[in-house]
Amino acid sequence: MTERDDARDAGLLLLYVLNPAALPARNGMYGDLLDRFVADPDFRGICEENYTALGLRVLGARRSAGLIVGADPDSPLAVTGTDRWLRITCSDDRLIYGLSLAGAAAWCYPTAHALTDSATRRVTAPDVDRLIRQRATALEASGPDQRLGAAWGVYKPRQQAVTTSQGRLRRTCTVRMCEDTLAMLGHFRLLISDTTVQGPRPDLKVWRSTDRFRLHIAGTGGPLIRQALQVAPLGDDDHLRDGE
Image (tube, rainbow, N blue to C red):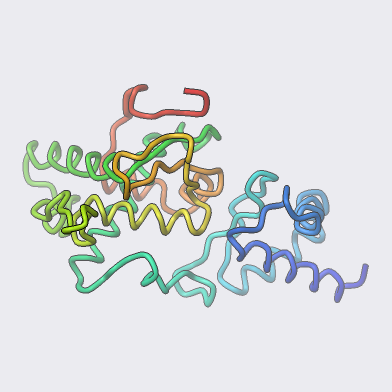
């Protein structure tokens, strides 16, 4: 194949990567390109060179998840428009959503070892909210700790669960904000909805982690998130895996 053909295929592979719904198992062309990326070092080098120029880093390649990339903050392909999922009306909202994202990652991957384990983990918005409050409260009880930062000061007084007249959670309470964060992760297939298990409320889902999420956390924010929340290893009963 010519260099032009390789560049075209690298671009085509990137199109699949940027489509969260695309999976190699369901798309023959994507599967072929992914196999070539793994097996052909020359093609892999062309892809990585082009992707790096766009501010992207290859985090892993899995048949179950596809080619997984992370975007630098200044990349033109970085996710910036979150209005579809997150209702950010002030800086306090941004802090709460940021802490809920950290909490979701910490719940699914509480230790460095968990980031090497491909087993999926169930997570719900109440799980995330409870984890944030328990860990931050424990740190707070041990004395002043600058690691909590402004986020916990905003999160702590916010009501956990407030319902509308229709019985749905208001978007300003922390459990609903955690759910909105999980839904955003679900859109990018970092989580998937687990329809085999009933949610804690009609307006809350049960989610499962994916390899895509694990590799994103391992390759980008895993250590930082765990340090920010000071998450200790959770007990075996805290997580449900496939078959449990």
